[in-house]
Image (cartoon, rainbow, N blue to C red):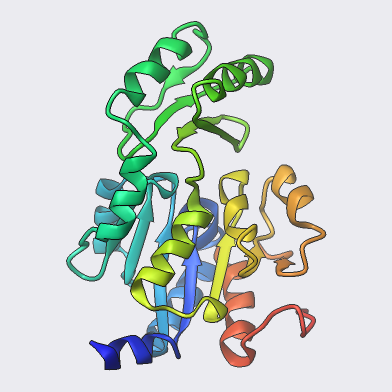
Amino acid sequence: MRVAVAEDRKRTVLATDLDGTFLGGALAARAALYRWIAERRDELIVIFVSGRGLGFMRELADRLPVRPDHVIANVGTSVAAGPDWRPLADIESWLDARWPEDAPARIAKVLARYPGLTPQPVVEGRRVSRYYSDHGEAMAAQADVEQLGFEVLLSDERYFDVLPPGVRKGPTLLRTLTALGIAHERTLVAGDTLNDLSLFETGLAGVAVGNSEAGLVRAVRARPNVHLSTKPGAAGVLEALRVFHERGSLWEHRLS
């Protein structure tokens, strides 16, 4: 076990969002990214970090030519580690402490006042998720839900996610890296929506791909740890990953 941990600390880590990022862009660009990773698979750790549920991610992992080493699902409220998709006890305890059993019912009672917020069809993990179309209604609902002590994340101008306090993709990723003995400084994060902002707020090296939503671009533009790629989806990920894997940083070297 010690040898495995020591080796993991030397490997480059890609912690990537899925929709619009790892799965985004042209078919040829996705194929190029997956091929590049496959050719260096022993040198890399791949972590999928998504708002999607574990069920979807299991099916996806079976279809893709690149399987993840670890998975962070449900906007950071679920973690599955290793080939057997095992939970990590410390992280489970941290998440459970922030999401009491009555949380979904309390949140649903508040959201019932806002008929424009419609349920998402499949929701797993410790969260309550809706779609919204009226930004003003979403902001009002956010204020009411936050009075209960939970956090609300609005992203991609349609997703309304209620999360445990202090829990998002970024904080869960940091705890997962620590729990698995993976070096933070060897980790590159990638994303395209405000759902991914917390990944960049960790201070880890990051790439916001070329198709990123405007709100994310505004939020990360001044962050020295984030490269704003002009290439969409998988092409933007590969552009940054190549440099980061070779040099161990992004911001000390200009990307073309």
